[in-house]
Every structure is written in structure tokens, then in C-alpha cells.
Image 1 (cartoon, rainbow, N blue to C red):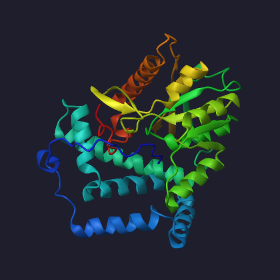
Image 2: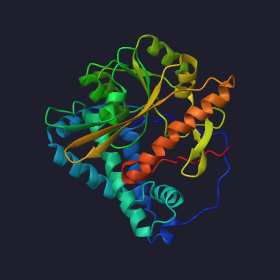
Image 3: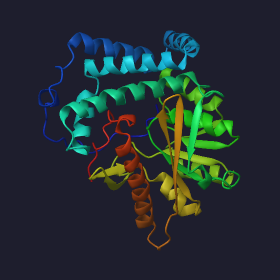
Image 4: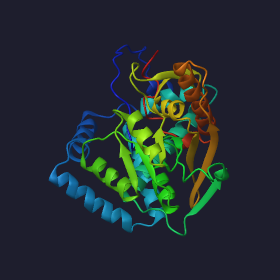
Length: 329
């Protein structure tokens, strides 16, 4: 999974809330559980060792032999285990309670568990690569909005929603040249994710100097993609409404839209039985009022509002475990 956020300079924290007690959840994981998770993180996610890389390659080879149904069962099983162990559970339930105050605790827990499963399945899809096949059901909603723009290049805002890791394969299968803003991370798992994305034909743009890279890719008539649903530090973000709270949001894609006058679209991949449903919203055309900062903020707000509407429709398919609202204006 891609991570674009940086460490916030703001260290202030809100009041501590024991969500486990409030929502009737299990107690925090034991020290043994925490030690096990830290050990696995060091082995597979942090600086890639030879053994870590070998383990990931073997694991991917095994996963590729599994049927889609078995991969889904494995992912949702791992998601349930992570939820029971308390991995990001408090963050997830806190986010859901803030976003959906009218839902009961049981429904929020149901959404949270399903969200864990979808996140694990997206990770497996990204690791395995070449997941789409001729038998995969792909429903294209409003795809006609993109027709006629592929040869010119345009901007795509997306999110950690549904089958987002399959977007590169979808575009590549249709002969679409693309580039994406991706934060490079150390570790064997992340190295495999990067390799899978590059095999799908995706050019990777580093978030530092992202605007320059995006404009360069647009000049090459590529489709330029950025996920807009992760937190940034206050000095690098713009703040726009998201589920009723002002939220630090990446502005690079909107800055590219303002600078290049190229249209932007929101493209999301909802996971459905047997495949994916791709939603296209837009175009989101940047205004030219003479106030470039204001134009960027308005553009970000419009795309974020469209994203929120889709998350409200299918909340279990978004990444609620992310600390999306940790940075404050």
C-alpha cells in the first residue's frame, strides 16, 4: 500500500479515549503480541534483508497459485486476526465514530472488520500483480468521460479504496501510459509492491518534487495518478472539509491542474463479487481567478467531497485504520 504522508510538526494530541471500553471491544494486545508484531515488521517491512526478500518472494509465488476466492479468504482471515489483536483498532473505531456518529457500535465494528479485510486483500493484489484476467468482471461507470483524453494525458485523483492496487493493471491492459506519485519505503514487502507496479507499466514519481514530475509526465501525455486521502504535515498540505472536519490534504495534483490547465478526474475501483466496478467522476477543472492558492484549495475541496460521497456509500472499502485527521490546521 502506498504511503504519502510525512511526519507532522504538530505534536499536540487530543484527549485520550478508551475506545475498547466504549465500544465493548477486546482489551489491548499483550506484550507478547506487540513483540511478535514488531519482530515481523523488522523482518518484512523495514530495511530489506536477504532473508526478508527471500521470504516475500516465496510467499508471493505461493499466493499467485491461489485462486481469487482463496486469496480473499486469506486476506479477510488476516484482517480479522489483526482486528482481534488490536492493530490500529482504536484509531479505526475512533475514525468511524467521528465520521458516522449516528451508527451503533455494532455497525461500526462490522465496518471496521470488513475494512481490515479489504486492506489486506488490496495488499495481496499489489504484491501478486497480474491479478486481472479475462474472467475478471470489470464494470466501467462513466468511463466515457475519459474517452478522447488518453492520448493527451490528464490527472487522476484516487484513494485507498476498494481494489486501488489493480488500477495500474486496468490502465495498462488498455494501453494507457501512466505515472503515479508514490512514496518509496524500505523493506522487502514494499520492494515487491514497487516491482509489481513497475511491471504493470507505471512510472513512479517521488513525492519530493512531485509537481515537477507530474508536469513532466503530463507533457509526455501520460495519465498522472495521485492518492489524495493520506495526511501530510501542515506546512505541505491544504486543509479542506472531509467528513465534517478540516483535513490536511495533498495539493500537488490540484497544483498541477492549476498550472497545466489539464482536467482532473476522480477514479475509484470498488470491489464487487468476481471483480471490480470502476467509478469516474469529473472533470474537475481548476479555476483561474488570479488567486492561485485559493484555486488550488477549491480544486482539492471539490475532489475530496466527491471522494467522501463514495466512501459514505461503501465505507467498508476505505482505509479507516489510517490516522487521517492527526494533523490540525
